Image 1: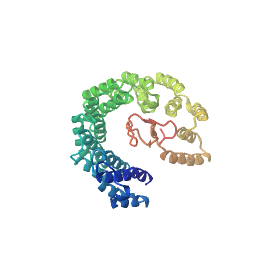
Image 2: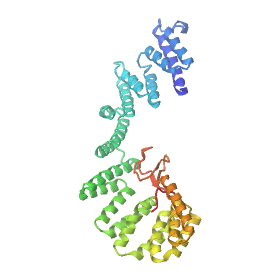
Image 3: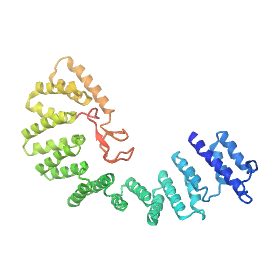
Image 4: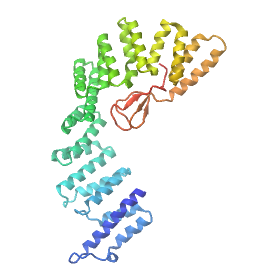
Length: 390
């Protein structure tokens, strides 16, 4: 409400000035007391904190011309930010209908109206306006940026790539990173359709667009594992540590499968111990406990878990410790441990497993684009609480 009233003050002043100017004789301003009664009526609404009524009065008084276009634009933008999209659309449509607008002013009004339509979820209408703007070369970058957002919302990844190419900013790391994700989306679709050769080509293009694209590496590793090229998959999975170690939890299971399937258990243990020294997170540690339990027994494994917990407390590892003790206890303490394990599981079920680095949004599963702030590659696994035991 305060923001709207602050904006309406210059609107009221502009309205009074315009009414006075229309009554000019030889360019001499008309005294304020001789202004239209509607002007004072609008002021009265404004002073009595009735901005909606004040808006209607001032809009009727303000004829659209070169002196008032910016005022109308500002009002429309404010309505859109407040969520009053219908009003914003009405104001911007009114602007576009005026023959007095020059070419640039009309293009600006089209851009604003397109953004109104986007906010209202009317993507088809918004798309038509932005395509028209892009063709006129006025506000084309803004129009293309909005088109890119629309096509991402619609998951039309081919069009996303076309728009990204038109933006002509391939040296922009942010845009190249987005392009890599578009290629990965297409690759995943082709993988589901068993078009492996096409999927591989999209993965290659994703890596050309962004050589540090973790998602492309994960897809490539998964494809190699599926065709039983375990050595090739291991090499790709291990490379992800250099790209972004935060994503190690996403490949540690696949890495383990590849080592074991190729009969390289000892190498796996050595690698995991070295990896744990570099990145002492719970996910690597829990895979190690599975192997240690089989190879070294419960006592050594429990000692390892206790040492980890002393410096890196988290619920996931605590749950594993309880589980290990349940296997060892046979008397009354077992009941207590069972209750504690159940409580920990319940706590874990309420916790996010992933979080956006940009906006802090928490999720249960990995999304490559944040549902909240729409950033790509900003969702990272959490090393602490998780929604289930491994």
